[in-house]
Length: 261
Image (cartoon, rainbow, N blue to C red; front, top):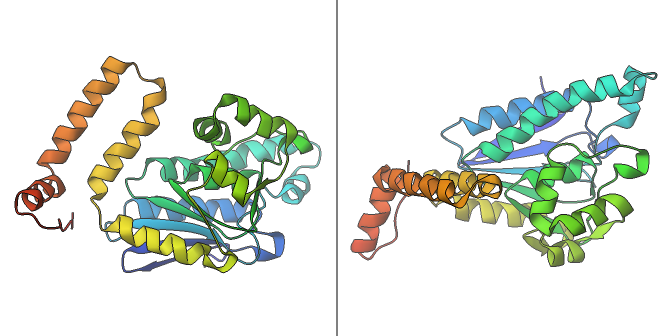
């Protein structure tokens, strides 16, 4: 039975807990496999309307388990890293592509691949004493887990390169200032705030959210004319969807919409 990742669902809100607190939730093969399985299952579960990812104990996630990689292959740890990244990236793709909002509740330090997981989520709630740390370059490694995709989109290329090159800890206050997180809360409030945010988002149209998420993600490398055509197709699909029809009726009838699709 899976133990490295704990997944629960309560009233449409799924919670994924990285559960290796003794190693600050470092990512080894078992944890990554369970994480990929969990997010894949939740992405297609119609009963789930929002997902929260957090860590057990004092940390969100300390990144890849370098001890595990060394023990698996002391002379060629890159071979182990290559295999682990395939599983890790499967989980990241599901997070980035699922039509449901995914919220990182950053309850403690998020370093290396742990920072990448947080940045891959749609929203980030960070405890005020938590820190981000890129933590790849200091060990002679490069970022994975979509870190090089997310980071420049959130803070710009120049600051992203600064973060990677100098590898200095980023406080919650600075993360908020730079646009790396959505909200900063008291230390014991990260999960509760993420839960409140999830419930608010879960009441909205998941179909419309999914369309907007996909359009925004793809917009950086799409010519204007192509993006406009994608927007036209998406807004038409939304209008014809049960959620869209309900929203339009609610506007006409001067009431709050009730989205159930």
